[in-house]
Image (cartoon, rainbow, N blue to C red; front, side, top):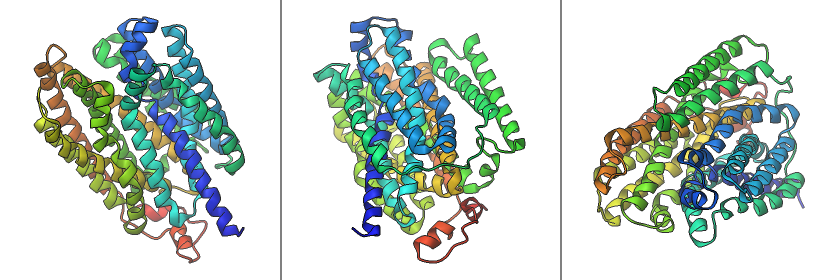
Length: 483
């Protein structure tokens, strides 16, 4: 076997392992939502308890993403990936066997810890395994799988609950994890980041700040935005994040160097990612309820009817990755975001208490194509905007911003929905849904404008190497891409 064939085989295995692991972590964001009535029937619990079965995962996942990436850079990315996957798989089994609502919430929180460690490392390990010339295609497949996981969570959760049992939402992760663990140990190469000592003050400030922000966003719609606990959490979280920024600008070896944000590529794609997830998460959260509560579809029927949106990444995202290799990521990402915004705007115009599926279909297809065009090139832009040794923390920061965006989107959309409508009747639901979708469309359009701030494609050391030309190994990609 030639060395080139071996490298291709290693890259293929890395793509399979990281994509499946990312699918598991991304899926568990929304997979529980359609199973909540069945969980309440089996385990009991008040409405707040049911909300925490969703929020406990989101909270620990978002808070620890940058910490997980920093630990991987310091102690070995494959080693920490295996540790995170082990924790996630074990916590999934514990959630499936939970005897009560409290133990289920605790298991979900531990699941989030494992996901926070493994998720940012999937992209770093994939980048290390795939040659620069083929990374766009690899990111396309990785993005397609992760986008499908986020969007199809309600369908998979609803189908398993309806046809088997809600326990299988969590049992599903166990065989996948047990298969991936030996494969990752044998097929993934170890790599490290900067080798600097772990930034404990930065870790504490970032984790505490994200905890306060995400906790406040999660509790805001239920407890009210003027609730003392909610306001205290948001204020304390904001203060800690400001402290994290100030500290990181002065520290010798910070966890997240603030100079990265001087790169228009890094700042622009992270702003676009945050805004994209605000609009997309909030819209999926409400539209899945609309199809069931207003149009009368079962969880499985609702999920199948959303496939033109949620399943489109599997078809289009690999093509988007190839396009980003050829023309650059900025035009592909921006086009995708504007299409997503147009699809949500269309849905806002046609939703009613008795709208036909044929009338909804164009909006679902447009949104699906837009989402698919976003995922792969966005990952490519994030990873190419920083030095190779900083890709772990760049991936962690991007994933953290996306998770915060998702929590913020659900909070904003739920608040708009509650202010303008509610669950009293089908028309009342539509009255709240329409302005929420308009808001989601506007936010995603802003994400498209943020993507346009990313500089156009320029030749970097990686692209020179891919083209067979010698590049300056010491020249950071962040400098090559910055304005």
